[in-house]
Structures are given as C-alpha cells and as structure tokens.
Length: 449
Image (cartoon, rainbow, N blue to C red; front, side, top):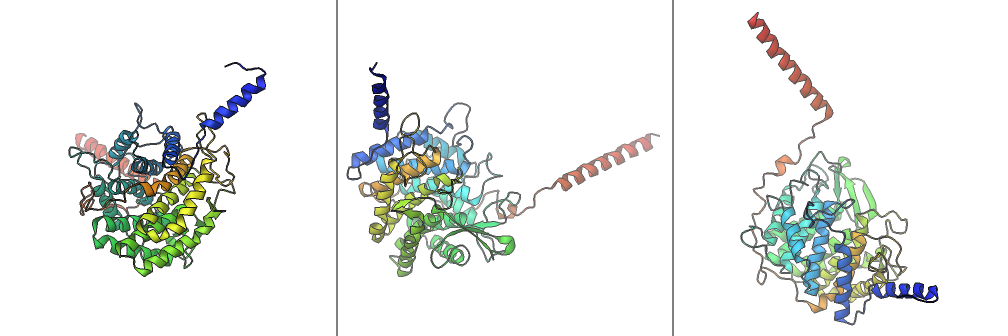
C-alpha cells in the first residue's frame, strides 16, 4: 500500500506492529490459549536442534543444555494446557535423543559437564510428561517417561554426600568440574521436587522419606525459618557460610515439593504451614503483584540462565494450586497480575511477539531470548489450570515405571569422586613413558652388541 502523506505509512506500520503483539483476556479461555500459542511460537523460533546437521535437544549458544530441558518441559505443559500438538514431534525427538544410553539424561555429549541441577531439569520434564499423559515414546524405543525420572532420582540419591555438611547434593556430579565443592539450593530443591512428586505419582513412601530428609537437611543449611532460600554453600567450609543471593526458582521448587508432600500426607498441618510460609515470603520477588528477579533485574545483570527463572516459579505455583487447593486465593492473583504485565512487554522482534525481561514497566525493554519468552509462556499458561484435568498418578496414568531404574548405570557413585588428571600427572606420565622406551631400546642395543 502507498500512502500520502508519508506519516500515515509510519502510523499504519505502528498499528500493524501493535496488532501483532500478544493480547490477553484472562476471562476468555480462547484468549489465554491464543496468547500462549503466540508466546510458544516466539520461543521455539530460537530452537535449531531439529534442523539437518544440528543436535536434537540442544539450543544454540549461548544457551546451556539444562535450559533446553526446561524449554521442552514448557512445551510439554503447553500441549497439556492447550491441546496444541504442533511441537510434540520436536519435543519427543529432543527428549529421546538427550535421554542417553542409560535412559537417565546423561548423554555422551554432556556427561562430563552436567550438574545435578542440569540433569534434574530434563528429568522433571520427563516427570511432567508422565503426569500430563504426554504420548509414550513406544515400546520399540524402550523408554518410559516415568522410569526415566525414577532413574535420575535413583542416581542422585546415590550421590547424597555425607562427607561434608551432614549430607546434601553437590552442585556438580564430577570432581573435575568447577562447582563440585558447592552444595547449591537448586540441585537439592529439584531432588526434593522430584521425590515429592514421585511419591504422589507412585504412592511409594520411599520417595516421600527422601523428600523429608532433603527438606530437613536443606532447612538446616540452605534456607532460614523465614523461608529465605539462599543460593548455596561451600562444602570446603562445611557449609558454615552461605551465598545469600535469592532466586525465584529456588523458592518455586521447594514450594511445589511442599505442595506434593501436603497432598501425599493427606493435608498434614506441618506441610500446610510450610507452604504458607513459603508463599508469605514470595513478597521479596513481587512489586505491585508482579514477579521480578530481585537479585539481578534492577541491576541489569541477569545472565542467560537467570532470565528464565521466573518461568519455573510460575510453573510450580500453578502446580501448587492443583496439589494444595487452599493456596488458590494466595497464588492465583499473582499469576493473573503477572501475566497481564508480562504480555504487555510482548511487542518486540520482527514478529512483534517477542517479550521483554522486565514486566513491571509493562512495555518491551529490548531484551529478548529463550528465557524471556519461556517465562511469559509459563505465566500465561499457568492461568489455564481451571480448564484441564488434574495430573495423572499410577492409577490413571499411561507411563510405566521402574523403581530400580538407574541403579545399574555404569556411571555410579564410585565414579563420581575421582580426582581430575592434573597437568603434573600428564607430564609425569610422559616422562615415565620416555624413560621406559629408553630402557627398552637400551636393553635391545646391549643384547645386539
């Protein structure tokens, strides 16, 4: 179209851009689904793992492996909430490729660098697949979503470390990785999360016992009586000092774990009180009812990982309402207010649907990516909890479990504490090799002479 005067073309272009933006009416089921669909499309456009020559399940740099697992967890939830299966094929492909030969999310391309929290985010995606009745991979594949989650849980239970701090999981799995001497809250929180959810799904009290044990240890080491969930502690100092930074996802993972324990115990008062305490302290992540990442957002220092953290808080707040319905009046207003603020930022990018990092200003701030988009997707679809059936359990689920999964893995706890090979070790090995070769050739020359 040609316009006169030229200013009308500019105004029209602005109107078209505004019309492309995500809109949301929380009183309309169709509007929520439409908004979720636009947010999901904006997120998936960053994924390249389904393209020829790329690796299924991997996001391109600068995104790390764990965030890809978190993203596919969002897409599993997306299918559950909306019924839109357009991303099921890439999700299935990614999950099966990254599950690894031992079906425990320790694939050869990641094994030597992944941490307990990284592995857990993929496992929690598999657990969501079981809870949401996501299509099974098929018998010929030999993988079950529930069994995969159980395998990861069993492997991590074997890594429970009593050498320092009286227990807990280390951040990293292998001793040669940076962070091996750090016991962080998200690794232990995800383990608690999985244990509580597996207890509800399977009815097996062993998982609940582990959840109790993890809560008790974490409450002594990682968070205080006011439910301030700190980042973690150095186990070389026997966890006597804490990094007091607080992140949304740490509070979220303990919240949903507590809700599942409340459900498993039939509404035990102790879990009721713990849930109320956690929700009461979510105020540190809220401003005028809108979520924000207090540790980095105002300072402008949120890194690639941290930009996605609110996605998991939103996801787990919705799941908390389902498992502990008394929390609805406490949490639903946060989900609604935050969702309205979040979608107001989704006017960026070439498609006009890219969402910003800061929601409180209700306008696009120029920052966009997988984390920003996933956070908005999760806060939108969290408002669909009233339109779907509750999560499955072993009684009505479609995923077969295996309580012993992971216990025969060749990467067992005895392999986890091996010291890294140092430069001195390598130099020593070379010197010894040269010495032995000299001895061999010298002996041979002497015999010939």
